[in-house]
Amino acid sequence: MIRFEGVSKRYGDGPYAVENLDLEVQEGELCVLVGPSGGGKTTILRLVNRLVEPTSGRVLVDGRDVAATDRVELRRRTGYVIQQPGLFPHLKVADNVASVPRLLGWDKARTRARVGELLELVGLDPALYARRYPHELSGGQAQRVGVARALAGDPPVLLMDEPFGAVDPIARERLQQEFLRLQAQLRKTVMFVTHDVDEAVMLGDRIAVLSEGGMLQQHDTPAAVLGRPATGFVADFVGADRGLRRLAVTAIEITDLFAPPVLAPRTTMDRARAVVDASDGRWAVVVDEDGCLLGWVEPGHAHDKARGTDSDLVADHTRRLEAWIPLGASLKTAFAEMLQHDAAWVAVVDDDRYVGILTPDALHAALRRSVGGDPVPV
Image 1 (cartoon, helix red, strand yellow):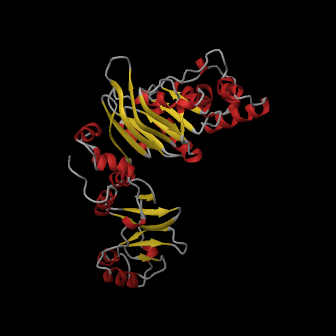
Image 2 (tube, one colour):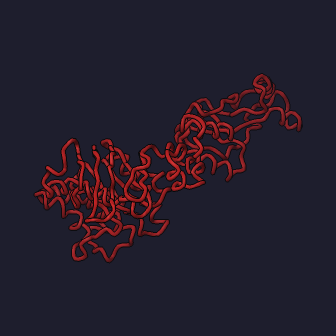
């Protein structure tokens, strides 16, 4: 855990870079710092590993005041990743990643195993990349090596200062997804600086919004920051399209789903029509005996168009369902699926099993649910 208690930092006689900061980052949490230039974001990271000292207040890591911790010891157990990975140009990739384990006194076998493990973890085949030099890497590959090096000593804390800001948009999205996968596996305590609100929303468990002069305006979940901005500054900073951004951070839950009638493929159309009529609906979902989604059927339409008889089976009239998403996917994914297939609803599956239907009304209700009701106007 990282805790800031009334921390201020001032350089000389100038204005405060950080002023009276109270902030807590829980163990295993990824906290993203966002705000304008001059908001003290980089200074806050540097206060954690004592690259700068506070003018007042305390910074604690795992309950221990960093001011009372040896700088070298502190930095060896704190991973640090910056926008330019800062790899040693004269060292091969493997030696760059191995630099911290060697400083920690690890033996060669342990170091070699750790290097191979980390390169695989960040998506770089050791057989292909371990013996390359930094100038032989793309920007995205170099950033992956930088992340691997920061993780090499298995530090409990990871500080990341705009680590993906200098790569192209396609590589950046891949790096973001890769880092989410890594964090889900490793659960490091991470402080991550970015200027990109979308990146903050995608990556953060919590977002800390700072105004110029290092004043903390709001520290909350992405959904709450977008749906209930604490101040006018936060509302302006996250943008007028924050409602759309909330789609990306709101996951679909079972309680969001609509449950139309469900039919087996060997149900007769006569029986199917009776079931659908009793539900006051027009259609039903078709699943197999294992609950796997097969499609949907509209019994009244089949009858009206004389496409069959009452003794026909549902299987003969089942239509393929193109629009479906996994349970736990974001509302943004659901909305995109609706638009792509020009669909009025999407089916939701858990692994292969059908669990329900998400309609536009349900999507709107889920969006409101994500912040406990109507968003507060600011």
